[in-house]
Amino acid sequence: QVQLVESGGGLVQAGGSLRLACAASASIFSVNAIAWYRQAPGGKQRELVATITLRGNTDYSDSVKGRFTIARDNAKNTVYLEMSSLKVEDTAVYSCAADLDQRTRTWAYWGRGTQVTVSS
Image 1 (cartoon, helix red, strand yellow):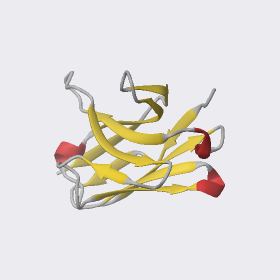
Image 2 (image 1 turned 90 degrees about the vertical axis):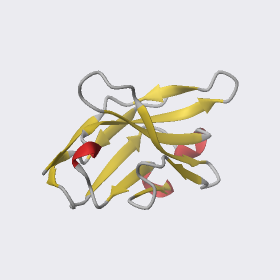
Image 3 (image 1 turned 30 degrees about the horizontal axis):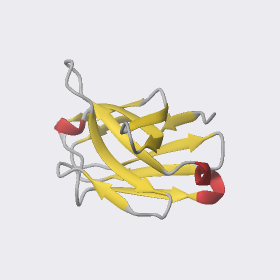
Image 4 (image 1 turned 180 degrees about the vertical axis):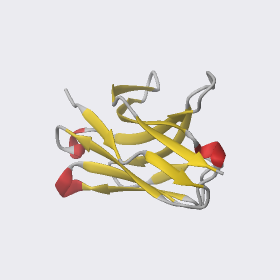
C-alpha cells in the first residue's frame, strides 16, 4: 500500500510559477510510474498532465508541454511538478497517481489533490 500526499498548491498570478510535490509513503521504486492529473472546475473531465516512469522517462500533455516539468527525488520518495508560465486555464485540483496497471490502464494509488488557482 502506498499513500500519496500532494502539497504546494496555492494562488498565483498568470505568468507565475509553482512547484507541486507528491510525497509517497513507500519507496517510489516500488511503483512503475507516477503521474500528475488535474481536474478543472465546472465538472470538466480529469486530464493527464505528466507522467514519469521508473526509468525516468517523461511524457506531457500538449497543453503543458514546454511549461511544466515532472521530476523525481528518489531519496525523498517525492515526485515534483514544476509549473511555469502559468495560465488562468491551468486552474484545477492537481492530483498524483502511482503504479499503473498496464492491462486495465488504471492507477493503483491516488492522492487527495492540491488546489492551484491562477488569477489574471
